[in-house]
Length: 283
Image (cartoon, rainbow, N blue to C red):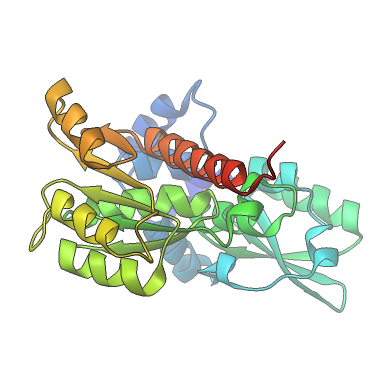
């Protein structure tokens, strides 16, 4: 009989009974997996969860899946819809054994179903939700992110926490993300890497966002790069100043990463449309 993940975590001493009860109450009606709920509660991170399960039960772990190469015939074993819904990703297949990245190694229903579908034995390998979704977005040809693999986005912000949050959201969409923690470093990366889009905070160390924008626009090789300003000033005057100064768009703090992703997509689409109009032959 299958033992629920929560009970296994309690039995292993990873969480307490009271913590599990709180998590299960919070999970009800959310549609979220227990590991995600525990992560959101700040009880245990995804990385801590897989490390604890690996030590307790002897599972292997894998990180950075998206950076690896996978043949199309391997991806065909697990449909994209199942990969996203069940949070699984095929890693390798040898001698009738399929190594499968999973977030919940005790989800025997999914594992047994995939074993029957592929006539193979599955060995679960622990991975975080983010790693699996990154891999799905990057490697499945039908995903929207597959077309974003060559697009570089530079994020310049003095807050490493905010930078990491934005970076994670954009990487899940398939973008190559470059980061810098001050204006001078951001300028150096912009000149050397020539990203397709730059997001920068207004209040940056060493060189603020406006000075960074002027320096980038003054260089012929980067002058056409669209830039989005991120600022804690939410007034109409600040927005007007940003747009008049040359920024393509303006995002006020506090912000949701979904809004950032939406603005990035819109900026890149508008830039691409402008390039197509410029290169279109005259009627």
